[in-house]
Amino acid sequence: MQDQREMVDAVLQDTGAIKECPVHGELLDNLDSGAVEEAIAEGIRMIEGGEMSGDAEEWERRIRARMVDTPDECPLCPDPDRG
Ligand SMILES: [Zn+2]
Image 1 (cartoon, rainbow, N blue to C red):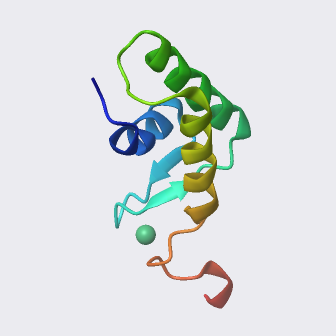
Image 2 (image 1 turned 45 degrees about the vertical axis):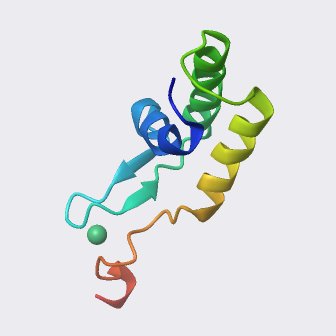
């Protein structure tokens, strides 16, 4: 059975809610709220199917907390506004 903590980023990347900076590999918010909802639904399916531990409320909380912590612009890429 998968651990929720290990699955958060994988499921978010799967649905396209987060993406990697192609240069630095930093995980970035893809600004796609539909994909976030999809990741929540996908995790709940896994919990109900016995593939992942924990419960649905815990999963949703982890997903929302991850999105709050994820920047939408790579902190390592040059800022385009500064040229
Ligand atoms: Zn970058």
